[in-house]
Image (cartoon, rainbow, N blue to C red; front, side):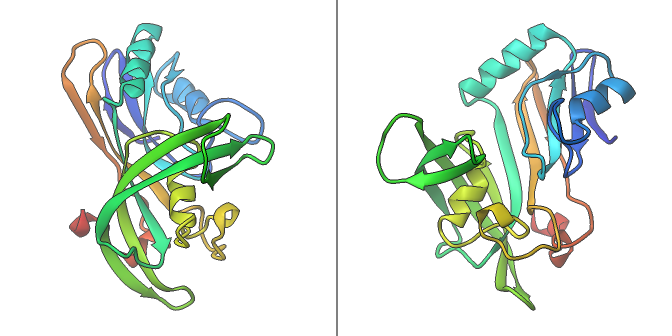
Length: 220
């Protein structure tokens, strides 16, 4: 397990894709892996989708968990992702704002037009880092995404609703089955829950499809 930052209060690890965020049916999870190999106990602070890899912070004490959760609720916890999407956005950078409804039975989120029970506002900003020509999908783009809100499957559904699904994301319309959903937690930045100092961690995806279609480290 790759450790990006660690002290006696928190630890930031690189979660592999296809690993759960917390214990549950369906396979191994990052909390158990971290507790068994780097720290014990470890407490969940935030979640990443199973298919999403990258930087993820865990706490080593409940006091730190509570303070980090408060930062997330106040939107003082910065989360940046990179994604590979089908197509190219109309603008090289911009903001997506939508109303999202999560269907818990289907474990799927939908963009809706009107406020109603269970509907939540979602906002993100993006920047196109590079484009490439894909032999099967035509133009594809590497985008940097900064979340303003943290909704279930937010990045995936907001791009897919604009006919730009993430490569490998069959749930939201991608026809590419060569990879897991091309979404990676690239950067976390927040105030340390105990010391108050600024903490930042960076993570880069593995050199494999579709990430290897771009020279990521030179583009970010």
